Image 1 (tube, rainbow, N blue to C red):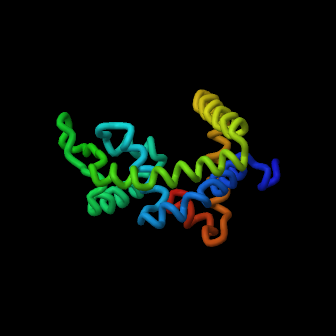
Image 2 (cartoon, helix red, strand yellow):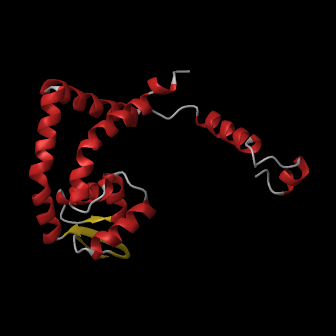
Image 3 (cartoon, rainbow, N blue to C red):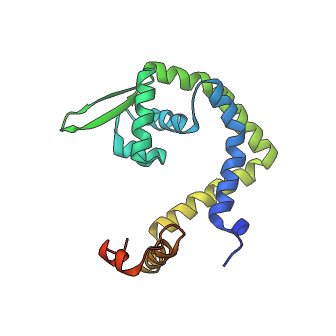
Length: 177
């Protein structure tokens, strides 16, 4: 097995953290979390979008997104309304106030991008972005393997993890949970 620090997920997280460290102070200065910023940025590319589609575009889980949408709506940065074709679904759009905030933050954000590109190198940054897009495309198309092994391993871990050790009869009576 690879060492923890050389694993692809950790390398990606470290790279993301190195980038976001430069953006967080800017976002905080405007009263935004990075997740809220992702929501607003995702909404600038569409007229309106269903909540599930927004969650996918912004890489956020539903419960977290719902909470953030309430906050952004309370600040009048976004608007929600029922979808015309299905009254159970909400459509979300950015408001003029939200667009104004984007326009206010954008110049500083672009300066940060420019600084990163100058420090890392424009060609290397472009190549990295191309490679990440290719990685995503290849892994999205690749079938997930060993799912059964992962499930079995998780079940074994849960049954032997501290605090989960129960007498066999009691565990069986509770459905093995």
